[in-house]
Image (spheres, rainbow, N blue to C red):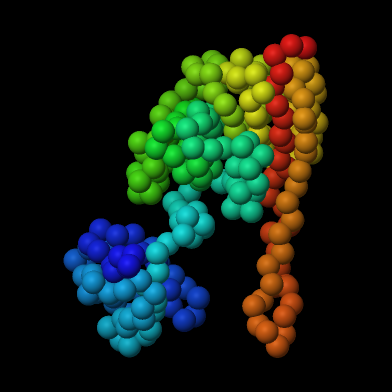
Amino acid sequence: MRENLVKPDDRVILEFEDGSSFIVQVQDTTLGTHKGVIDLGNLIGKPYGSKCESRNGNHFRIMRPRFVDEIFKMNRRTQIVYPKDIGYILLMLDIKEGDLVIDAGIGSGAMCAALARCVGPSGKVFAYEKREDFKNLAQSNLSKWGLLERVVIKLKDIKEGFDEIVDAIFLDVPDPWNYIQNCYNALIGSGNIGIVCPTTNQVQMVLAELEKYGFVGVEVWESLFRQYKPVHERLRPFDRMVAHTAFMIFARKVSEF
Ligand code: SAH
């Protein structure tokens, strides 16, 4: 049977009945919460999914954090790519085991981590970032998630160009149209590029540049996600939704144009 007990140093998510939750690494210390103090050492040996109590009797459940939980709770000092967009971007860029991928700029590292999970131990993500503070933040996030070995982080402005030839490029910078030529040079023939921008003006500028370099299969997307309250007698959407994150542009390189 699959081993399912909490071990020392495991990352766990502790979920209280009021919907609040905490991601922590299990060590012989305590965690102070608004629902009472939790003795983390006591979690060792408990089965995942089981119910426990804080010192003042509030119940919580011990679960394995999903990657999406990590993203919603991650340390961030930049905008990040939203989970609803990340999944589609991974598919449209066709990211798979063994791929070489460029991610620029790394920001807080959300998209970079998603790429690193998909390329597996035999692939690599080359992540570019011009600010040292963001590079360090992303590095610490990736290290927490055990993904640092799959990523080469470069403190470099992408206006200087890229150092690799890769299967796919993901671009998340304020002025992506300025780097389409550098992306063209760094992509293999038939390689995929994905760009996110929050405004339509930026999309227009990017489209003009993609055309200039003969990219094919150009698509512009926006994903609208509406969550429902999971109450069987009164099934209806939540009152509020995230109305806009970013437009996603995808295209493919052809060598002859
Ligand atoms: N995709 C990231 C967020 C990127 S935020 C995530 O999911 O976490 C945009 C980042 O691009 C910022 O960190 C910014 O410093 C960096 N950046 C902007 N222009 C750049 C350039 N010319 N070269 C390298 N990095 C750049």
